[in-house]
Length: 251
Image (cartoon, rainbow, N blue to C red):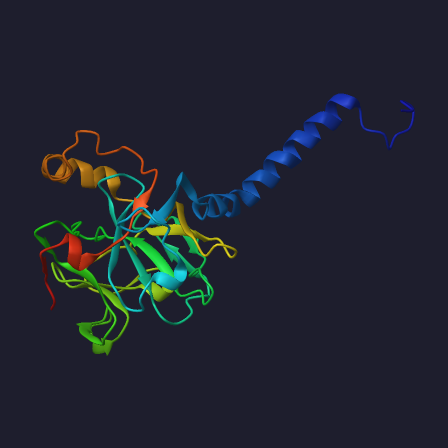
């Protein structure tokens, strides 16, 4: 560097200038980075979905409109597995109750029709239990009051009869009606195109697991016969809801 050249910047000033520019650039892009972080998959153990005999569940095995349940990412946290029968391919941009943004990337399988969500209602955490389930998937048209107050009837919804929260599984389980403040947490599925097998690998959106354990922990320990409710699932057994729950409440 020619120190006599008036256009040259001394090294110390140059370093300070670079630091200032970098800080300003980070300040400008930080909202974008936060949004990207919020949409990132929260990974858990990669668990194959199996049937009651321990054999792999394949996309072609899932009946359209059937309520299937499996437990993930923990041994005591129920999830819905649904074959919608129609593509759920367009991604959906959603918000948690705390305002964090995330993107649900759509269904999986040959027709992009297979989706999975936490079966813990985002309002008061109603969920499938052995004795009763107030929350389930309705393939046939169900009547409910939309978030804007209008009465409507729509097929293919997840309906919680505890407080009348309704979710759209074809659009990331976004809230269609009722008091829920956020969508159901989505379960990220992987589909092996060669074998047809399905795997659960993580979650998107507003998890409610810690609150779930806090409020229902004692009953869950009795029901699942374990004190380790947070044990991560290695293999997820898929069952029709009717086989794990004695009564389904419809409204």
